[in-house]
Every structure is written in C-alpha cells, then in structure tokens.
Image (tube, rainbow, N blue to C red; front, side, top):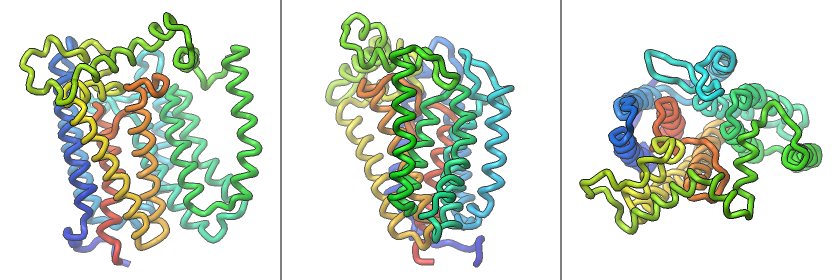
Length: 376
C-alpha cells in the first residue's frame, strides 16, 4: 500500500473544511476582542493566529500522508504524550496550583489537548487489531488500561473536565467498535456502584479524594443549590456570561464602536472557557445559532464520512473525532449558559489556546484525510 501519493482534492469534504475555517476566523475575531479589552495585553491574538498558521500547515502535510500510516505510529505517539503528561504533572508551570502547561518558545503548551487526539488514533488502531475479538473481556480491559494511564495523569494535574472528555470518547469508541453487550453490562454493573459511592462520599460525607478538589465539589453543589444567595455567589461567572449573551440581542454588538459597554470585558477567562459570552454579545442570537449550526454540520459530516470510510480504523477515528467535538461544544456552551456546572473546556476552533486550536485542527485533519481516501 502506498502511504504517500498524489491525492485528488476534489474528494475533500468541503463542508467540514469550510465549517472549520469559518469557526477559526470567528475565533480569531473573538480572541482579538478579548485581547483588546484585556488589561494584561498578553498578545493572545498574535499567539492564536500563529496557532492557526501552524494548524493549517500541519493539516496540509497530513493530507498527503495516509491515515493508516499515521495509525501505525500511534503506539510511539502514545508513549511520547504519556511521558510529556508525566513531565507536566511533576515539572510543569504551576498556575493557580495546577500543573497543566509547559512553555515552548514562550508559548504555553497544554499536553492534555493533544493527548485526546493521540488517544483516539491509538484506540482506533487497537480496536482494528482486536476487531475479531471485541467480545472478549481481556480486550476491553486492555483498552481501558490504555485509556486510564493518560486520564489519571490529566486528572491529577488537576483537570477533571479533560479527564471526563477522554472517558466520554472512550465510551463512544468502545460502544462503536462492537464490544458485546455482555461485556458492557458487566462493566456497568461493577463501575456504576463505585461511581455512586464516590459521589455520595464526597458530597454527603465530605471525604477528601486526591483526584477531586474542593473547588470542583463546590461548583457542583452551587449549581444544584436552590438557595438564591448561594446560587448567585457560586455562579457569579456564569451569571455574568448569561448577562453578556443576553445583551447581544438578535444581531449583536459587532458594529458598536464603543467597547466600554461590552459586558464580557470583566468576565474571567472570557477568551477561553467563557468565550461564548463574547460570541453571544458580539454576534447576537443569529450569530450564535449560525455557529451552532456550523458545529452541527461538521459533526454530522464526520459521522457520514465514518459510514463511508474505506476500512474499520478510518470509521473509528471519525467517530472518535465526532465524540470529541460533541463533548467539548456541549460542555463549553452549557457552562456559559448555566446549563452545566462551571468547568474549564475550550470551545473547539474558537477558544484561545494554541494547543487546543492546533489539536482540534489535527483531529479534523484526520477526518479530511479519511474523506480523501473513501474510494481506496
């Protein structure tokens, strides 16, 4: 099989490509607005633009390399990213008592974002290797163990939301790969009581667990609270985000010259975790709906490409990328609109974060790679 050969760009899925491109440009605009109104002036826009350029170059190179060749390197990529995660946990930049970043050439690098993509590729490779044995318990435990190592390192940083996103990807991939209901049922019968016991012990009996921080518990309790004063204090950021989104009205404030009346300017992490507050205020209800429709179109096309993939591994990779996009879009927008407890996950292609942007582009680049080889 030829892994490097001339490709026909007419086969490229332009719905996925154009959706991603439009979202990236919207993200650059929103990050620029956050950068302009920020007192720190950290050059976020310049770094994000650099990330878009790096991601575009990476995708262009990837399209010429067959995804099956990339999957053959997935074990080495998995070992590499696991070692980087371990290094980050023990020697990374400590910011607000969390070790999630290391600095490369002056730019913060967050390995957990890239780990999600690497894990999708490696799990797809393993599922393909064991595709005739997916009904065996030992295969499930191999997949679970492979997933558990980077997930544990990420949760200990601590970054629980990224750990949950990996578990969601794992669950979707395992189900899609054809694991028998007998295996799934047995695992759920064992795991669900443990999860319930952890939730009860932490929330009711205040048991301290190393992978669950007190502020994470407080966020959930505040979200579930019916006390108005407690709710207002615990959900201050989310209430501010909702006010910003509401103030955008139908068409938004993009054309308003006076930036001093922008509600999102005082929201913490408005360039990343709460970037949808900028989206809502600048682009309004219409712009927000268009963005959601772009994500919807991209995700649906990913599933369609999965159904048309030339082989099993291509199908699993597309499903993994789809599950990654679904989880992060739902959680980020859900947090900004107070549908979910406050947690930190970037909105793909829009939130500030060079690693997040490049990793998301690589993930979609894999889907585009598979779309080019649908008839191989």
